[in-house]
Length: 120
Image: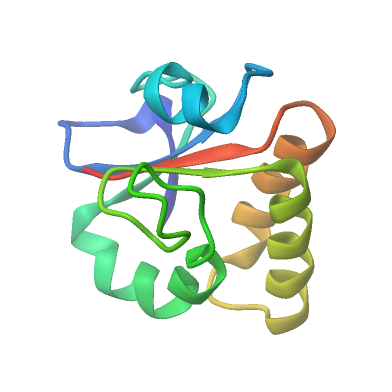
């Protein structure tokens, strides 16, 4: 379900991307990301039903451009604190392929300013 960006073929992916900037949330949602970062973790759209069945609940409390604090089609940002909570919940529940995502998310907490979840 999860693949490194180096294995990308085409453009139909959801992208987990590290937040490498220390800006306020409004600015991060507008300019804090780009697409196809080398260290991103991807989910191909062909896996979207399995992915969302397993992971949508963990991603529902995002910082999104519409201000609704729910999973948004497009740009979603999660702070270090939000990411820590997500990691603990995923570890507890152990959904499909959780080890790959947890390892990636832990780095978002220790080395970066959280992460973005970017839509197709």
